[in-house]
Image 1 (cartoon, rainbow, N blue to C red):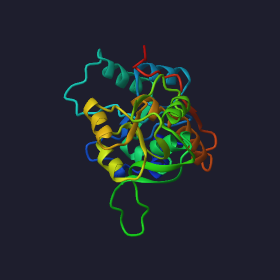
Image 2: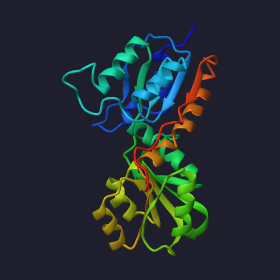
Image 3: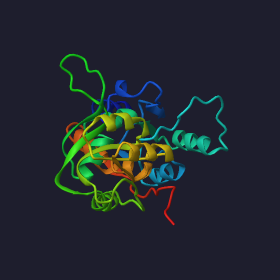
Image 4: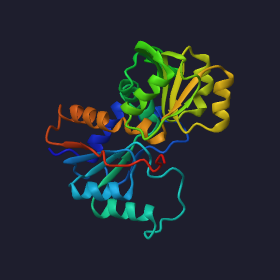
Length: 270
C-alpha cells in the first residue's frame, strides 16, 4: 500500500516529537491533506516559494522544512501575496508542507546534533536541559562537546567557517584563547548565553548575536563565534534527509527523499 502524508508524519514524530516543541512554536502539517499519497519527499530549510517550485518540478509530494510556514496566526490569506502563492501552489500541486522547528532543534539527531557533528564535537551533553519524565532521556536546547584536540579561537573560527561553508564568522574574544570545549546552538542562541556562562565551554557557536550580547561575552572573559542563522541551521538538511530515508526504507523503500541544498543565505559578506 502506498505511503501517505500521515505515514510520513508518523515517522517524523519519532524523529522530532511535536510535544517537545516550544509552546510558542508552529510545527506539524502546515498545508495539505493527511491522506495524500507520497512517493517523493523534499527536505529544505525554509518553505520558500522557489523551494516549493523546485519541489514541484522534481515531482515531490511532501516538503519537510525546519522553519515554519506560519510563524504567527493569520487572519486572511491573499493569494496574490507570497504566502498566499505558496499555499495555493501546495494545494493545487498536492504538495503537503510539514515543519519541524524547535522540536527538531532538540531532537537526538536534529539541528544541534548536526551542528556539533559538523564541528567535530564528541561527548556531547545538552546545554540547556529540560525536565524529563522518569526514565526518559534528557533533552533541551543546545549542546556542549569536546574537540579531539585543543586549538586557538582564531584557528577554530576558520574551522567553523569551512565546516559550515559560511561566508564569514564574527568572532568575540582573544584570538589566541585556547579552545577545547565548545557550546553550540543553531539559529538564534542569545537566549542561551546564561547557560553558556554556567557551562565550562570555552566558546559558544551560534547565530544572530547582538552587540550588547557580545559585550557581555567579553565581560565574562569568554569567547563566541557567530556563524549566522542560516549556516548554523542549514547543516541539518542533508542529515535529516538521510535519516528520514533510512527510517522510511524499513517500510516504504520506494519513497525517495531528497535534500534541497540550493538555498542561499539572505546575508552576504562584502
